[in-house]
Length: 134
Image (cartoon, rainbow, N blue to C red):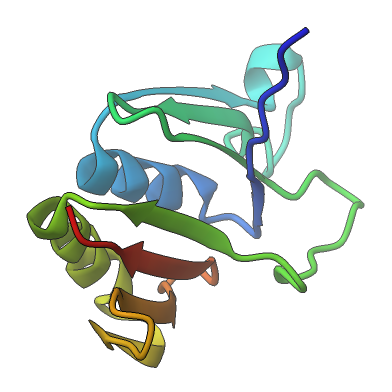
């Protein structure tokens, strides 16, 4: 048996912009489905009911706008963590995802020898990056 762990991110009307940004930064194929595609009408019909990004690096992110009547709650107790050894690529991702967001810990060398940083992007998604030696 195999299993995959995949963050499923929630947004309050910004899922399309967020998921398209993550695709631009991380690459890969993005599929977005709206509530309208499943028969919903009205002002929330064009919100994203389900989005999935699959990147060439093996990262899978899913996300959606909060459904009608569900109420939105920002991420609590969850952070998307990306670790790797491709310093240039990970530093580039960090720069793009932290831009316009809030940096809690700048991406810099830590006592354990790796570069580490933590931020919350402009869509409210918390990220941690750990860039290890080759």
